[in-house]
Length: 460
Ligand SMILES: NC(=O)C1=CN([C@@H]2O[C@H](COP(=O)(O)OP(=O)(O)OC[C@H]3O[C@@H](n4cnc5c(N)ncnc54)[C@H](O)[C@@H]3O)[C@@H](O)[C@H]2O)[C@@H](O)CC1
Ligand SMILES: [K+]
Image (tube, rainbow, N blue to C red; front, side):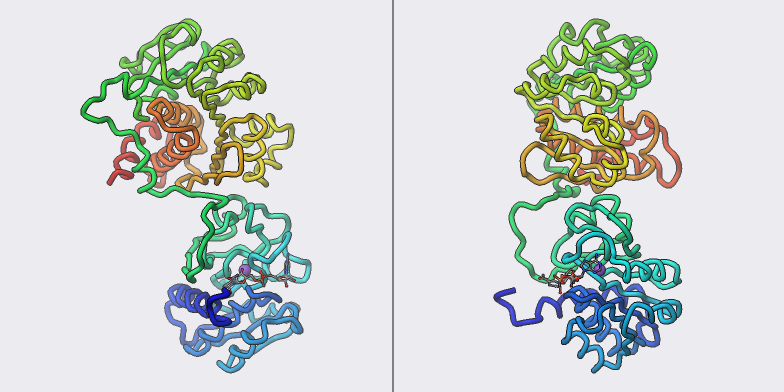
């Protein structure tokens, strides 16, 4: 900002937002546009955008929330372009009802908490109207830095965000309010270490383990699965199904469900004793369907290889034992399990995913993959948290988590570190869920089978 003439960034922002609005409207000329204008620069962006749309023949009405504290240059530009102004939110109803497009410039990254009482009704009016809602930078009322929503917030069809994505656009519940997200590059120099990282295809492709000419099954890594019980043999089968698709050279199974596993996957090396008797592995997965088998969990945590702990294993894992481990540990709770480990309610975890995943990683001295509508992966310390962009509601199906733990454990055995294994596992799993579902319900075994399609898609 110091290097550029005053207002340059705002003009770039307005040009980008205008282009997105024009795409959405199809025809700008003759359209009716309402601007919701707060007291900061976010409102300024909305006013400059309105001025540009008015010059192209739109009928633009600006609703000023705090008329005496409105971006002066933006307001002057709108007036020059022929826009009209109403002073105070109480005059917003009629124009919003008639609008084709509502532009939300109430508040952006300068906001705190949910919308204030005078602004809150505007979010409802915009949602009830037939107009498309475009949020400037962020849907007003969501927390930019955490994705939390504490009170009323605008629900947008499209968010045009400036300079860079914000955590609130990637993490639920705020993400749900943003609609689709379009990034406008306004030429900001960004700091090196972000709060949040989302992998894309090319990042995942670079991390996937691919066998070289010299590889054999042991060099590719052996993953051990200590899962399932007489009562829940299916969890063992699904974890093995995931593990076979994750890049390890062999899958060892140790536990009481060996018959079920071998019947479905004859390539598995099965044994019925304790994991510490099962032979060497490069990583363990413990917990899915394990019931109350605390001994298996303890045996695995005492092994000096990377360990993934899921489901029942999370309840049975001793925190001090996890903290004392030298090899990496990856915990994969869903919100309910994370809540139990943190001693808070499930709602609290779901409302504050970013804070919760960091807290859990710190408390256990382990990498944590928090599953759910937005899957997050955090290691202890201040490094970037990974957010998985491929998730889909179709994955909320029984056994899907067992597939994820097998798949991710396999990546650990193949040599990925815990943060990479967790984020690549979640990425492939989400993509596999999408490919398998293709718009219709799926079972966990379908997801496991589609992991290979996801892998090919990433490598393409
Ligand atoms: N920083 C930059 O380089 C750029 C910033 N731009 C815009 O500037 C915005 C940030 O502007 P500001 O720092 O002026 O802050 P905002 O415009 O985001 O919000 C600050 C104002 O909103 C009010 N407010 C705060 N919380 C509220 C709530 N819960 N309900 C209702 N009103 C509330 C405050 O009274 C304050 O005056 C960005 O989001 C973006 O839209 C762009 O113009 C491009 C360049
Ligand atoms: K906004």
